[in-house]
Image (cartoon, rainbow, N blue to C red; front, top):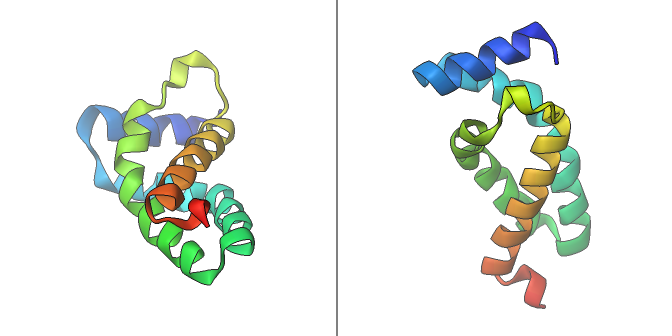
Length: 98
């Protein structure tokens, strides 16, 4: 993992540095948008709009959980975590029961 990512994660987790979190969100957007598009294609534009709203609100919690020293690539962590989270959001909103 690049040194910059480790710095952002560490600053956010230790100091709750919002600038570091913003940088992480910007960096991860390209990992999350394809997931949103996948669910949008399957469930429609309204589902995609809901996920775009929810992904940003969940970043704070998700990045408190990532462990730099475990060795799991950030992209794998982000994609798997958000896939699970998005499925839960869609289930609660009734999209996956249709």
